[in-house]
Image (cartoon, rainbow, N blue to C red; front, side, top):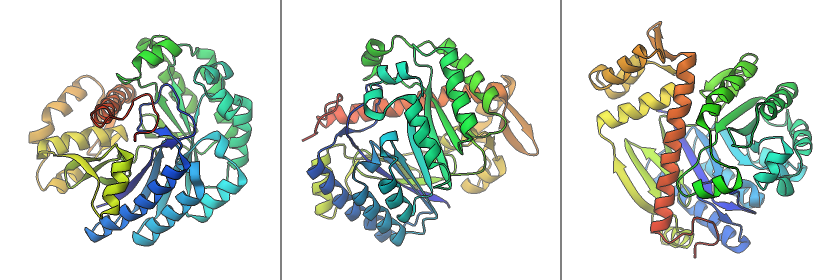
Length: 389
């Protein structure tokens, strides 16, 4: 069974107002302690008998301390059978020295948080001063093309102040650049960020979201193909939504979420507690929930179709029983609604189904973000950022 190793780096040099991921402002001393603890957590999974085929490093900003990151990547690759490594970064970290270190550490996919090339949007996102103008960011991306197997641009659509013209310009820049891959997320507003998003950008209009999504699809397909309902690739490659291609994944790092053996679990969100527990040789688990067979199948139904195709025979083999007694209602409802069609024994999303899955996954990830916020509040971690000490 293919498994992925997810590693979470919660540190950022500055915090973005719309982000609900577990992140705090960079403290260099604490960050070094954190990476040392991560390198103690990695071998604990080997001792439990796990192996992993791929690795994804998210955040936060994983490249805030690239020397520590490289040492951690090297350890993971020496410990497990990892064939592909993806790392998230920001535009200001696309420097030759950092990129060389990442390349030498085995990174073959780099995912860069862009969000938009529009200067007015970048300013409202508080990213213009941090990362430069849209023109400067586009120039950096062009310089990086070809240095990794896959260069991915993380974009966001449906900011309240975003116009159709802004979106068209973003699309034109990326298509002209012929970037390897684009992941275009809808704006996701968790309960904790809703007030700040409304204050900074205005109220979200979901009717506009559908229009924007259709514009993205018609502009990118072809020369791109669907890797997920909101990820577009020129060729087959690893994607940000590793939950599509990997049956299971371990979550390492503070606040990381994993899914192994039908059980979903979360690590502690308190960074000092995370470090202390690993120094004692303990896994830093905070909570877990074992899914029933029906819940596992519904999870697979959602995730596989997010990748646009569901193979019912493969899923039945996985569980040693037919999926139809468990998923007949979901399949029938989406078939009748015109969101799915069946051909060659496979269920595939229709054009209407692609957007339906964007909506469902948007709500799924908002729920995950709300869960993170709930855990952080319960642990006494301030949602607006700062050190959780």
